[in-house]
Image 1 (cartoon, helix red, strand yellow):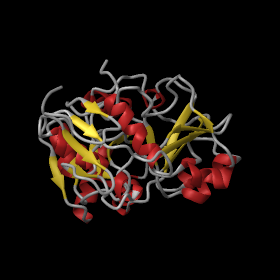
Image 2 (cartoon, helix red, strand yellow; image 1 turned 45 degrees about the vertical axis):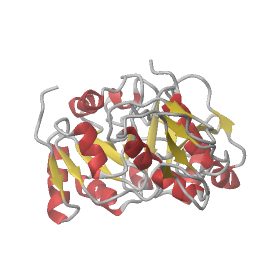
Image 3 (cartoon, one colour; image 1 turned 180 degrees about the horizontal axis):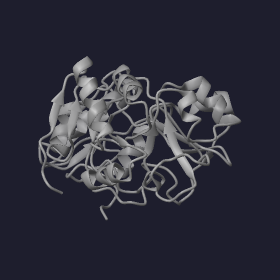
Length: 311
């Protein structure tokens, strides 16, 4: 795609107004959410959505998440009823995406859903994301603002490193607080389609047991090789082999540590930033074992995809 000049915007009134203008003109704007930085385009504008795929190099069969400012706005595009409505009222705004049937007359580009009859939708809690969505006044399709399959961005610098010259602007509001993509839940049956920034246990405490995702791609982030650095990644390593750098967890010697205290929330927030730093060292990455509970399930999901054979 032709190289364009990417503007770095402050998260103030002028920056929000420029982001609104660019989105309205069919441009692409990266903005922070509580999970990761998103790459936003008008979800009703097929050309803008196509540019998202082009900028990321994203396979067209991988659907996008639509971001809206509140539950009422979500109801314009998706049928959120029953358990999905309960979860929305309990966890929105926040790091939860719901996959629900599309409503008639939704007006969204078919590229957003990758031809499916369902829509992945969420209400982010980050104040800058809320400002952008309310100023724009329409649905914003926003996958993570990184080249497809690469490490997700938790700072504006990560976005610029991967997409400078491919997007119109980046709103820089510092580091994301959650640091993992949103958890995705679908219905019929109620199922965990992607673990993420909201723990499965918290969802099941409200909605009951969740089924597991099947093999087909029905939501973002389900491709086997995803969130991948350039370096080879080796999991469940208690120490680094010769020539490797070690990503630790808990009290251990390592090149970088997700959380010396063994705190999974801290580890989730650090995951992508630490992977970016280790990848820049140009050596294979060994990763210490992570407990597979709470947010550890989401962390391990991302690490398994990062370590998967590249297609």
